[in-house]
Image (cartoon, rainbow over all chains, first blue to last red; front, side, top):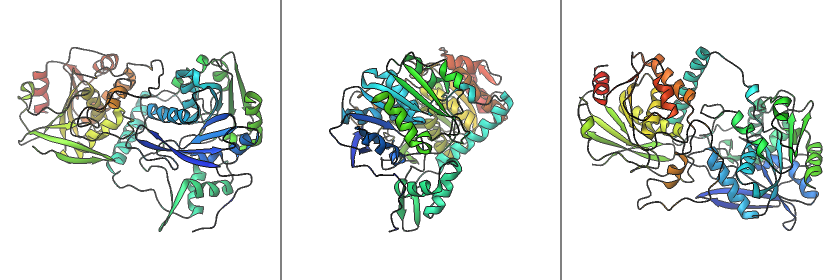
Length: 301
Length: 218
């Protein structure tokens, strides 16, 4: 085995368990005293709960039982045959059910932020505070292209996606060294320190005889197509009746939404607050964990 | 008769040879909660070549997807796996199968030689825009044999089908198939997505008999 890689301030969860979500095993991770009030936290797409290893202990130290989980197909959760938004929501509720049926503070980053926004809209009795970390996709941030260009792009994407689906049986992710996997991740996370990315490899990847492989289901891929529109997420925001904190990074980042401030402000509910962080990218809780933790504690403490 | 078993990721699919023959196959796609019929329906008997039918994921003899997560683009992938086995086909889709047939006609335009979109269960899906959000904790128990998967029925009646999104697939089929007519709408009902498709160039509205004759020649 390779020697353990550490990262300043990072702490692995205090407890790990599994929740059954309609036949699928979802890996749950907890930081903090089990008797403390719970706070639920959802990671972004292609991430895993271990990406909260610096941020979650800060909230745990402030007196919360921080509960997160690996989305289906991500981290240590079971790989599914199929993935969709509704299934991710059901998995989230299965985790909530394993903790409490009371309303609790909920934090979500990126895809996790959009998921938790929909959960708060669908099940408002389960959410006491909603914190969204750079997870508010906006229609205005998507480029406007001609129909002709769109048709060409879509043809390419459709063919690539169907070819990918044909090749899935026994598919595996590409093996490599810790450094190679960290370098690959850096393409999508260019603002994050390489030491952090190497640390993440030791959690989000497994060591096989021929090298390290990210644990994420090889059937999942970036990009794609579908009927989903970014504004379908933002349209949920005005519905929320509990305190809302939205934190957006303003620096360009490949995984970010580049959501304009005005688009959030126009949808913010009465009990909502928006904080725009300057010189911070998409991973606000990783680039500025202390600052973001203090913002969160200012809302939920 | 034993189906041909095909693998789409973790799901084993059942592809049924409903009638042997020479020439390009007609591929039958059933509606929501249906399965491939045991015999070629009388209204498809005029197809001159072989007739095959695919049980979509969570339906008929095909596997249930553990933990669900059904969406129509994945079912398009099911059909594409069948096309990889059969070669170029003409598609006849009922209800859900009509929508999936449209998707694959756009996605594999060179290999789908016409798609016939007919009425049937699951035609409308979840409508053109998202409805009020909900998160069910359970659905009814699966029937003996496991299919149709109750989660498939739940999810595939909530999937959003915007008309302009559906029209994009009709456009793909028209521009990339090389066919003058790539899609024939033969049903009576016109949910918004199908209204959008019917208005596209390269799409005709006609009788089933005319559609079969047209695509048999093309």
